[in-house]
Length: 406
Image (cartoon, rainbow, N blue to C red; front, side, top):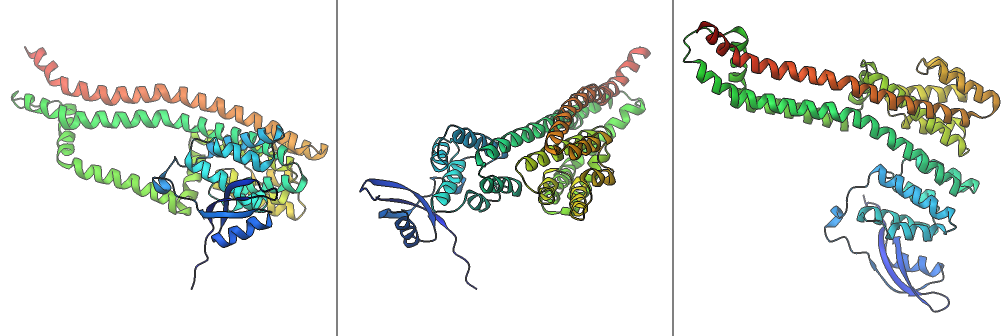
C-alpha cells in the first residue's frame, strides 16, 4: 500500500503583483503544488527548490525543550502586543533564534500560516512541541478574536509550570548527586584501599576484629565480582529507564508509589494540585467549556492518580454535578481547595479563585522543597559519616588494638 507523501519545506523566489522581487519559504508536497499556492497568493514564482538540510543533518542545533516553547510564546505575545502582524512576528522570532531546530520549527509554522492554514492547524501538525493544551488554548483565542491575550496567559502559565518543575528537580538533584559520589568513594575504598590494609594485617598473626574482618570480606567480594555488580546495576538502571519510556503500567505504579513516600509524596501532591489549579484557571480564562478543559487539565497534572481523578470529574460534570462536589468526592483535594472552588462557583469567578489556589500551592511547593532540602542535608551527611567513618574505623581497629597490647 502506498504511503502518504509528507510535506517538505521549499525556498522560493518570485514577483508580486507590483513586479517587486520577493522570496520566502513554503511547505508543500511538491514544487508544482508550492507554485500553485504562490499563484493563489498573487505571486509569480520564478524559482522553487527544496530547502537544503543543515550541514549536520537533522542533528544541527540543540533539541527543542519546553523552555524553548515557553520563551517563544512570550516573544510572540510581546510582538503581537506591539502591533506586529502574526506572520511578521514569526519571521522576526524565527530568524533571531540561535537554535537551528527551533528556527526551523518557527519558520515552518510561519510557512503554514502563510499558505492559508490557521495557527491552530499549523501547531497541531507538530504535536511533539505543541501539546493538546497549547493547541486548544490557541484555537479558543483564534475563535474569540483574543489571540494576543491568550498568548500572554499561555506564556505566563508555561513560565510558572516550568518554574515549578525546576524547583522539584533541584530538590531531587542534590541528594541524588551526593549518593552517586558516595557510591563511587565507597567502591574505590573497597577495591583499592582496603586490600592494601589486608596485606598489612596478614602479618599480624592475630584474629582481626569482627568489623574489620567483615569489611575485608566485602572488599574481596568487590574485587572478585565488581564487573558482575556493574552489569547488574547498569542493567537495572537501563531497565528502569526503558520501562519508564515504554510501559504505562510501570509509570502508573511509580506515580502511585511517589505520592505515598513520606516527605517527597507531600511535595508531589502539592505540585499536582498547583498544576491542576493553574491549568484549569488558564483554560477558564480562555473561555474553554469545563468538560473539554478537564481533558487537558488531566494531562497537565503530571500524575496518573490525579489524571484519573480529573477524568472522573469530567464525567461527573457532564451529568450535571457541580465541580466542587465532584472534587470533594475524589478525596484528593484538601478542604481549602474545594471551598475556594465552591465560592468561585457561587460568585461566578472560578478562574480567579483557581488562580489564588495555584498561587498558594506554588508557594507551598517552594516551602516544601526548602524543607525537604534542609531535612535531607543533615540526613545525607549523617549517612555518609556512618558509612565512610565505619570503614575508616574498621580499618584502624587492629592498629589500635596493637597499640594497647604494646
